[in-house]
Image 1 (tube, rainbow, N blue to C red):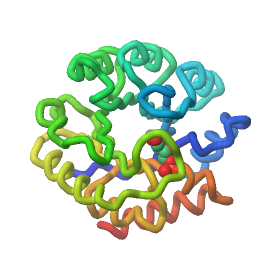
Image 2 (cartoon, protein in one colour; image 1 turned 135 degrees about the vertical axis):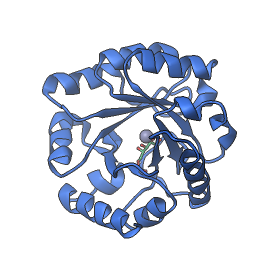
Image 3 (cartoon, rainbow, N blue to C red; image 1 turned 45 degrees about the vertical axis):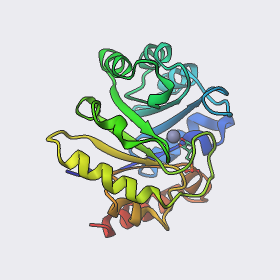
Image 4 (tube, helix red, strand yellow; image 1 turned 90 degrees about the horizontal axis):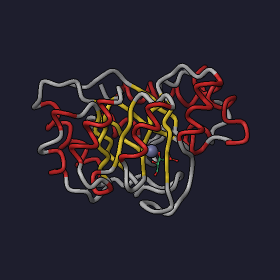
Length: 224
Ligand code: DX5
Ligand code: ZN
């Protein structure tokens, strides 16, 4: 069953020189979670932010869930660091972990929700023996590494297939989509079965964060 709609702005597209203020603004504008993209110049070519910044946002006073998306290899050492820094959910790419089940267990043992991230060409059979242990499945609709890329529409069919897999279980697993999501395509993404939406440039690139988040929610509702 679909979970309640969550809009998770990716701070990758925020003004990092004013990060605390940007996060306050986007939460005041109606965002539900803060999506936190961690890139290591190894698993992906780009280099972004680590646990220090997550901890700084908590110390600054951010209370909303912080949804950490690890695009790093290896994964395990960062799990504890992000849990200590105040992460609520931690998602990782299975091909970046030597022992996927162990990483999921580490995330849960650290008190966080666990997510598995599937790139546009990652086989869905990574879910065969992990789905029951996951709190969320994050479907990439771009190749990881950069914000502002074009949504890959083939991913819609993959989202439908993962929706069916989740619905075949009794678990409350979120289906999250990340990459190129905007007001113009979010209805299709929701209709395919997503309930949790990451958007970076579409939100932080807008003049009015509230307007775009409100339009996104309305567009999700249109999907029924
Ligand atoms: C890409 C990141 C995304 C990205 C989304 O590797 O995981 O979260 O920042 O940005 P937009 O919405 O601009 O595609
Ligand atoms: Zn992300």
